[in-house]
Length: 277
Image 1 (tube, rainbow, N blue to C red):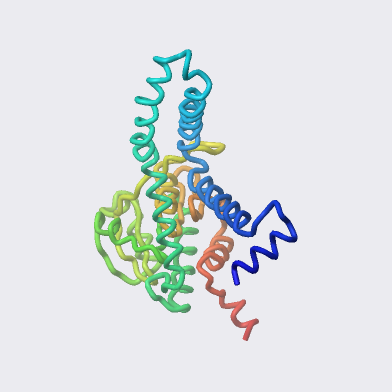
Image 2 (image 1 turned 180 degrees about the horizontal axis):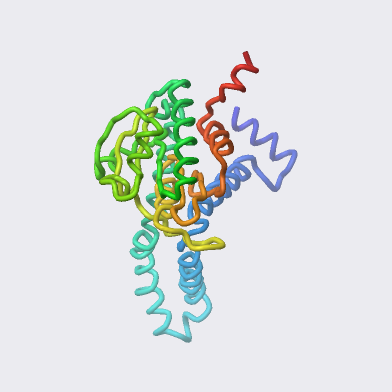
C-alpha cells in the first residue's frame, strides 16, 4: 500500500515524495517545539554563540584546510569535541524542561487535580478568588499554587505538610504577616491545602516591563517546570496575578480571577452550569 502511494505521488510530483514532506514536517515541528521551550530564557543567547561556533567548526575545515593547518587542527580536535560535551551542560535546564514537557504530554488521559470532582474544584476556585481579593485589600502578599496533572509532592515535602480542607480564613491566617507559615507558597491539591511554607524554584526569565519580585519569579518558575497554576498577590501593590505556563496576567479582579481559573481548570461556573441545564 505504501509503495503504491509513493508511486502515485511520484507521478503527480516527480520531485517530491510523501516521505520527504513528512520528514520536513516532523523536523519543523520539532524545532518549533524546541524554540518554544527556550523562548524567553538565557538559552537564546547561548544558542547564538553555539551556532557561531558550529558554523566555524563546519566551514573552516572545508574552506581553509590546506592553508590554515594549525587553526584547522584546533577546530577539528578541540572546538568540535568540546561542543559535544558543553551543549548538555549549558542547556541542562532547557533539556530538563523539554523532557518534563514530554512527560506531561504523555499523561494527557490522567485525572488532573488529584482526582477532585467538579464541585470540589469549584470550591477551590471560589475560595482562592475570595482569599486573593481580601489579601489584596489588606496589602498582604501571597503565593498559592494549584497542582494539576504534574505531582508537586517533592516541593510539598520541603515545606510544612497540612493536608487541610481549603477555606478563606485558613488562607488568610497562613499569609498573615509574621505568622509562622506566611513566607513562601502554599500548594493546593483538589480542595485541600497540601503544604505551606513551600520553597519553589525561581524562574530565570526576568524579561518584561519591570523586574519581578521573588513571589512572581517563584510563580513563573513552578509553572515553567510543571503544569501547575499560580496565584500571586503583590505585597507592594496589592495586584492579583495569575501565572500559567510561565505567562503572567496581572491586575485581576476577584471575578476575573475566578473566570480565568475556571477556564484553565475546565470547570463550568455555577451560572454557566445552570444555563447549560
